[in-house]
Image 1 (cartoon, rainbow, N blue to C red):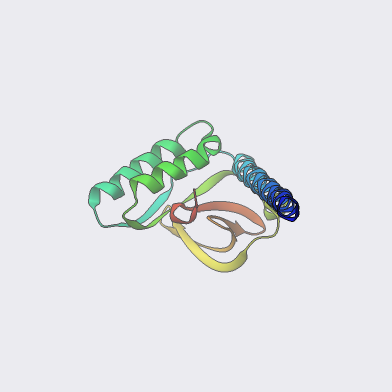
Image 2: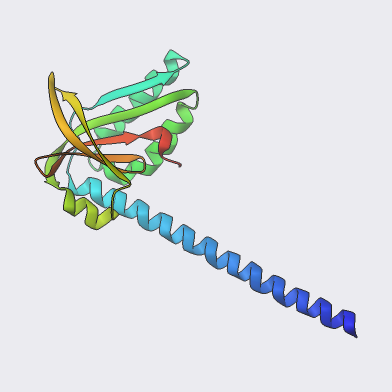
Length: 169
């Protein structure tokens, strides 16, 4: 009789613990999807991507060229933001032997950093930096959100940087 009670108790506890884990996994998946949706919304807010600059370090020339071609084609799309995550995965797969895979590009509609914060929350970090676009060096403050960084000039996001190696996708 005692062993049946112990077995029953063990089954109930295992069910509760397992159910809790299922709930935690569902919450994590939901949070990840929400984060992805907000990243897409932030890029859409900024409009089309201008001509970008690539930075990659790959052990093979073909991996570097393949990833650049994929990124260039993606940015030229009508709604590049909608394909952000699938492109990040493709780039990560193509450039598995690359140690660096980033691009930065100007945006069509500079927007206040506060609008990005409303979508993505408080940035992970902020630091001073610069970019060179059209042979002109521009000082910026970078607001980093994981693998995305927003370059701010005079309070408005004017440049986006994407670090595909940090995408985690």
